[in-house]
Amino acid sequence: MPNQWKPLSPLEQIKPVITRMWKTQCTDTEILQEVHKHINTNQYGIGLMSLRAIQKSLGFLGTHQQGHMPESIQKVMVELQQIYPNAGTCEMISLLFHEKQMSVTRSVIQEYFLLYEPELICQHKACRLRCCHFWAAGVNDLWAVDQHNKWLRFRLALHTGIKLFSGKFLWIRVWHSDHNPQLILTYFLDAAEEQTHNDPSMENFGITNTQSMLRQWHQLDLVGMLQHRWMQHKKNIMPKIMWSQLHHQFTPGFESILEEGLSTDDISRLVFWWLFIPWLQQELDVYWDHVNNTAKHHD
Image 1 (tube, rainbow, N blue to C red):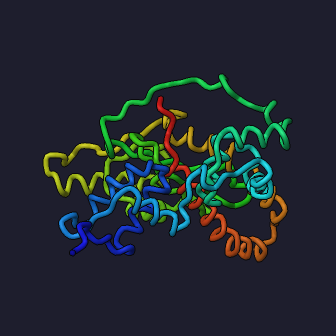
Image 2: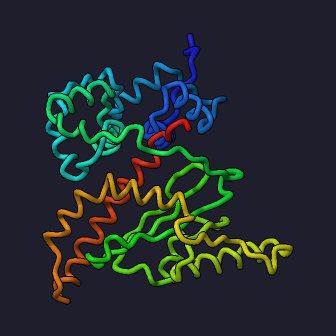
């Protein structure tokens, strides 16, 4: 008697989908629905139990399956706190998941802080933030770009692009300068060609001119009309929020490393750039990945 069930789709076809959805912490049902969109359902089939078996074989275990306690996460927490000394409960849950593939409940993290880091709880900043609304017409309606010069004393400059509707990063790049419009333009071209919302700095001219040219080229009725918006002093809100969060969450641990390697000697500085910039870019990519794959607060 032939098997009444359809065969499973090849793993190499559905693994990227499962991995991407798992990183965004979707439920098994949501992952299954997305998998069905990427397979030929007339030829292949997959159910919830089969999906969970595949996830287990890939090492994608749930929170209860991993069963972490404060004692089991102590070594990893100490390691992460060296790089992210100001990370709170929510941030640490995200870091553990995206950097260490550890799914830990909020109660376990809070219990850990009570046992091992009680002084950090006193620095809690709840109820000190103001809630404001930012309006965007829809997805890719506006992109915001901005530079960050707080690390110029280390001869390092950061630049970012953000989707304003979703709040997700388009890029975070580090280089020894942010005054090269051609370099900044490559960040934009690598991301895409949508309307932008810029900080009025010289390095962003390449983005704004290219944005206007591309849109006017493909839509003639836009000729003579600006396709970007300059935001004056402290008006480029979303990137400023992002830099504030980066400064609080990411930079303290790295600044202590940078202070040790700070030198005014030209040869030492060139060697420093050659060694440190690729490593820091890799760390920024990890930060970019875990922020983009962490669900935003409902408001």
